[in-house]
Image (tube, rainbow, N blue to C red; front, side, top):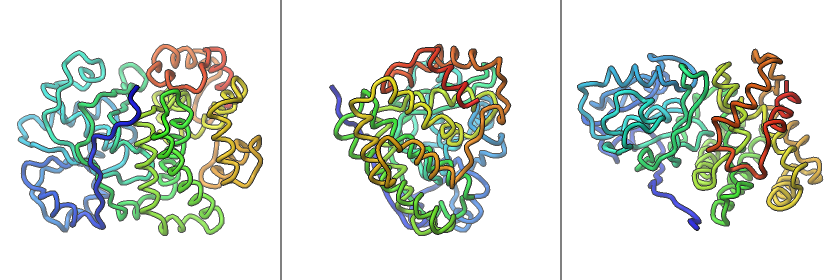
Amino acid sequence: MQLFKLKTTIHSFDSFKEFAQAFDLGAKDLVITNEFLYEPFMKEADIPCHFVMQEKYGLGEPSDEMMNNILSDLRGVDYDRVIAIGGGTVIDISKLFVLKDMTDVLQAFDRSIPLIKEKKLVIIPTTCGTGSEVTNISIAEIKSRHTKMGLADDAILADDAVIIPEFLRGLPFKFYACSAIDALIHAIEAYVSPKATPFTRIFSEEAWNIILDVFKKIREHGPDYRFEKMGEMIMASNFAGIAFGNAGVGAVHALSYPLGGNYHVPHGEANYQFFTEVFKAYQKKNPFGAIVEVNWKLSRILGCQPEEVYPCLDQLLGCLIDKKPLREYGMKDEEVRGFAEAVIKTQQRLLANNYVELSVDEIEEIYRKLY
């Protein structure tokens, strides 16, 4: 049994300029990023890389359409290394551009071509949630199929992950909150996964300790408190990424995919809608084992009894972003059963990491409670 794996080398710098000098960025580097990050942090460095601004190809979550349009524009561009500087969208896109002989990204998601890495990959996260800089996973909305798909393969692992806290400074509070909640869910889902080990649980626990402490301080002092803990939060996201990169995430993520794929709800916000309700279902089916440890550990941080953990989590997270009924995103009552069936059919990669198995009826029940 494999207990732990981390193939990515992790670095930290105080600024982009320090990183650019240390990594000797130049003309053979493809940098995929956003204009709102390039202007304040990279433009002044005046480095001769080939820059791609992701938002020129579409807004929101990464999609096959977005990736294929970038792929088309990159034909004839000579590069040896991909530098991803951004949030989850930029990172998930960038991972695909290290693969050999890909002419359509669906070839990778469908595995209709051999997945061979031919470029180096360096990832700099600019949110505190994705953890994707240390995982072998890329998620995209497949527009033609009205769903999201995940590709998990070591061919898209970053060679280097770089932590630069200054990038968090310009992140609007809602994006910060959604990404940080996503990191919290990564840590907690990974802890109860059947693939969890003593090694992964060390990273899970350290991640949620940091995140919940910052959330409590934000509740007390207001949103600007986040600027006091930028380095800690981006490190916590990294820890959570290491945990779920090894142990996986489960039903929270699986149930959120139809919400993101059909109604374009941002990933972290979609996960937040299902987080505590999924764990209540876990607790009901099997109130023993790892979930007992999680509830006890979280209750000490939240200052409540273990049986009060999920209402207390909802109360704390509700101070950051609102939890809304699913119908407010556009979900229709007649779609609920179909979404539950689609999750069972298309998300077995994630459902394999559930704390306990959930049937299609139990998944439908969770959707209906939140509808």
